[in-house]
Image (tube, rainbow, N blue to C red; front, top):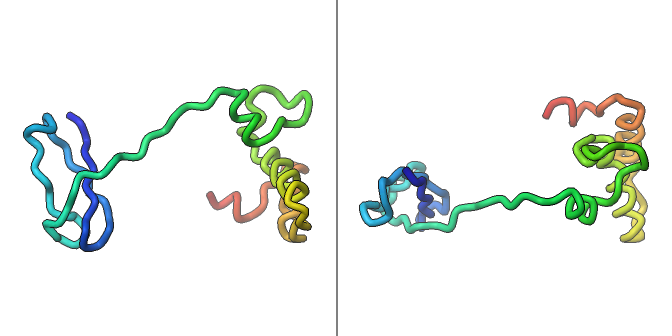
Length: 114
């Protein structure tokens, strides 16, 4: 059964509905506000990225870090530093402190809570 999404014209939120086919699909009322003013919406989708595309977007990890380095939260700091340098903006001290802690293996409190 396909899942269809409907956008509410009254509150702007989305409602999902299961239908056997699009031909038998009836617009459901909004599950958030109850409005009958819903319309089919384009669903979000994801596209996989190759390792090369990930490295191009986020930067090359430290040498010897391995193929899954971009998944390592410590690599995010390197990427952030590069972006600040590219923009010519100085990185805030708090951000630098969190990056240094992550590099030493200690994840900052905001990240631990995720």
